[in-house]
Image 1 (cartoon, one colour):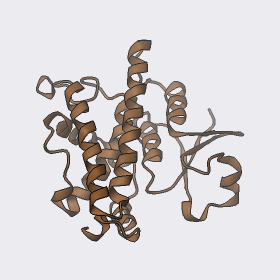
Image 2 (cartoon, helix red, strand yellow):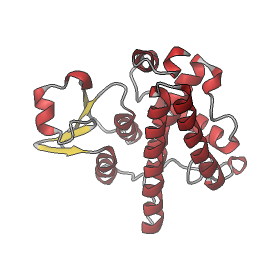
Image 3 (cartoon, one colour):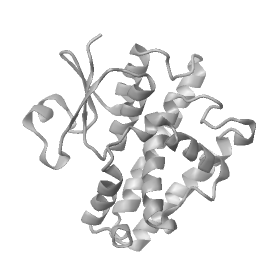
Image 4 (cartoon, rainbow, N blue to C red):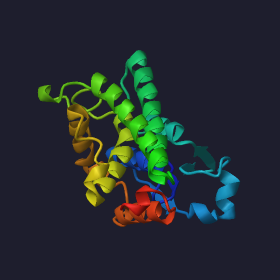
Length: 223
């Protein structure tokens, strides 16, 4: 099989999902980093939306993280999706829920005014209440989204939780997870995995905070 090449921006959570997937499956791959503020011409020619991630497989190019992860899951065993079609569809739907959380998180960190930041924070917390109600009981050893084993849907949430952890390490007021017991354990479980720990470069925590500050957001002024 041709070694895939993942095109990445260091801080992109969507790329990170694919890296976690690749590391979980122990796939031999290459990764190229670009600057999204100064996109190279060769990248614009292969990325229809001008976004990362992009996966290059031989002469073929795939874009959109959910599609890339589905392809990687289908072509590298063992599959991280449930076998049952209904459960698989359910996991895909909750993966989209994770994407909505990432959008909220970006809005929360980038809001110029405190009231706008607070509004985004409340949207995140309302989604947390929904997740808390459907997660399995960790007291029964069910530490992942669907129980005792990791699935592709878990990789969709790990980058979100990691960014929350970066923020919490800088200022405890940005700790949103601790008020949700099941969510907290799920987050801690994911962040303890080698595939998650090794899915970003060592400088990413600092650069993430610097990125927020550079945009002169309300939160940036507090970090």
